[in-house]
Length: 266
Image 1 (cartoon, rainbow, N blue to C red):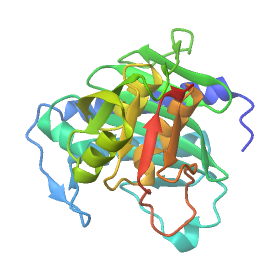
Image 2: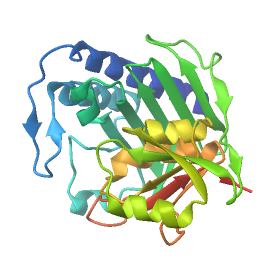
Image 3: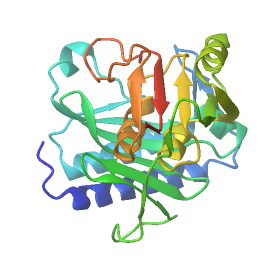
């Protein structure tokens, strides 16, 4: 897909994320009916309402581009030949949403040739929006309603660190484990640990609030795709533990390998 009018598309996708995020917040103070899915993750009405908005709005942009979402799965036999598609997590951090700690996001990414080329993340509890697109950098703004342009966004960049520097290290709030603890102790010279939920972690590394996010628990491709392009366009990187770049939709399973997301190393 040739994104000639990159800013126009980013504006449309940003407004979709804002609209979905505002719908999520309508459920925030309600008592949530929780369904447990096959993978033991929780599902709420907010997940489904956000998913519905995103599907309808993305189809309105271009009906021919397929959509893969956490809440609307597509069989491998159908998606294995996709070259360009939307990858969506309509409510990342459902546990954090249920716990009402504000650390949940709306994630929309455009994948081309197995790599994210555009990503938008909206944090509805904080009214903060991030976006990144291939070769155009990453940006951030504060907004709680439809925006008319991208003029109020500020460009964000990661910190630049050497191995011997002190690192701010993100630990998943709800999904940490001993493998994470051991890796950090063995690989990071000096650090503070910060617990954080959802894809906010990628965004905050992208804007220099933290430096490193090793992930040794299960994640799916929709959990990280938007954060992936936002982080890399801000100067950071995300690789598996063998230092290989992550690719998308190359296999039937949508589970990611263990990975390390980081700021720029110098």
